[in-house]
Amino acid sequence: MFHLDYTHTNYEAFVHHVGQRLNVPVINNEIQFPQDTATGSFTYVVLPNGLEATLINCVLNDDWLIHRKKITEEFYVLRVDMHTVPGTLVVTIDEDKVKDMNTSKSIAYLTSSLFDWSYYSTKGTTYLGVSILFNKDWLA
Image (cartoon, rainbow, N blue to C red):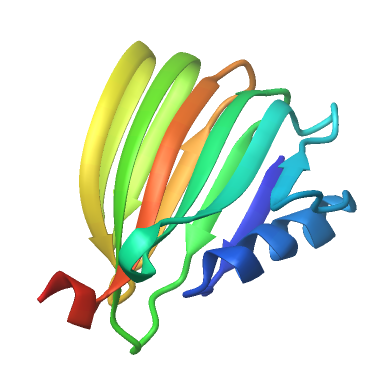
């Protein structure tokens, strides 16, 4: 299983953290997943007005558990994901869980760094997603 815990509030640093964890280089703000983890890419993008985004486009070649641990510094993430899941998908925000099996699902939701967030999905899942990171001043 590919398991990653993080607390980043900067997506450039996060993409580099993922690259280090997978032992792959970051080239032009993008990593290509190693075949044992996934087929596809993970990219960092700078957007106008101080926003940062990541783009993911992959098929999981292993089960994944990604966990953003809560922190006291307030940040928000708007997530838009499309999944085709031949097994299990579980998205958790603090104690609230959404679990689906054998599904195709498009979801959009806002998360905060003030709460734990995790993503679990099984091998064979197609994962397309955009995550946009912004601080509370930008939200205001």
